[in-house]
Length: 292
Image 1: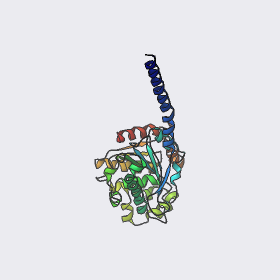
Image 2: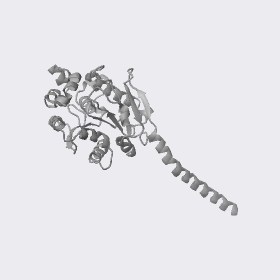
Image 3: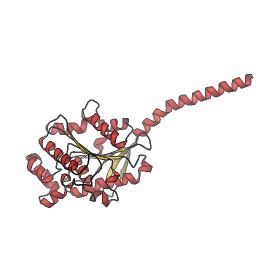
Image 4: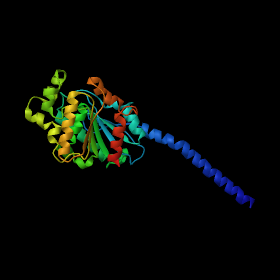
């Protein structure tokens, strides 16, 4: 009888020890997982690369971010240490930040192709990287907002890499413009006119081809959340894109947040993810809904 009691005590102690170890180790493992970052190439050019941070588990949704920079500068490393990255990781999401070739060495058409190629690489490698390939959201800021809107409305870019709009759950442009290029070049002010000409040229047909609002007839990506600050051109362009998408039967919410000029334009990118920034819960709710 005493031997049996001793065995039971030892068994209970061993189970308690294993449980304590699991509790102590699991958060560390989870932290290591979300902290681990991979840099990979999706093409041969040195700028055709992306940074990838795994989510909480292999079924995590993926948020893909495309940086801004006037189509001629910017870098995927802008995501490192950002409020967006920390916040999305805290929600368990996997995160990717995409580089693309830059004007004048590449065209805007090639940049949109790079975004699509990065998506195709990620989808093909979802099992190895560790995320749910069926739950992918595409977002971008400024010029990146234009590029994700273009990829989300003009099917040729995804089709060229073997994908379709069904491979996305939604598109989130952050304070973009140039959704209607010709209109933007008329209304965008002198500061950006040279940048627009370098990116889009002067041919009306090409400008129309690179205008997401003019591609908004169905089909499109399944869902859009279009955010902007209190810039006149950003407001006008965002509202026009949203209206064109809704007219085609595509769900599209447009919402404005406080912030003026270039400071506000930068703020929506830098502060997104900060719990005190009003856009953060709006994006959280949208991601939770499309990933559900």
